[in-house]
Length: 162
Image (cartoon, rainbow, N blue to C red; front, side, top):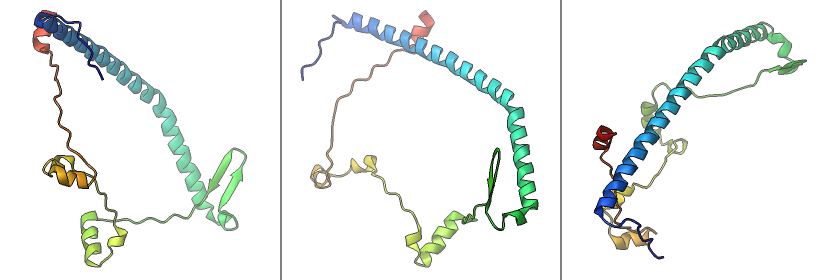
């Protein structure tokens, strides 16, 4: 794969390009900042407009829940009531509440209940840098060494001149 030849002719042109990169980055950050301010303003306005509706919805849900709880005997034959504008239903749920996860994990290990623990394994690529190339090859990995160019405009200087 052939490398693309640069149109820049000397270091002065590279310096000018760095300035342009910096100016563009500053402009991009400014526009993105303005966008974020507008988004935040819109979010606050939307939340303000929706707050009474959300509050009313929660109140109605509490009212429906209280009514259903007060009339639970109506759910003995069927676990649900289909009405004109929707349905209310009771569903049997089961959950486990754990007060202290670390203590529960330790106790489960002590009781030999490891089958009930989730274990997540992930490659530690930083640590894998310590492994020799032959071992890496045996595990289906390889070391890749590259020379990556960093382009770092001097934003302070560019801002001072703009």
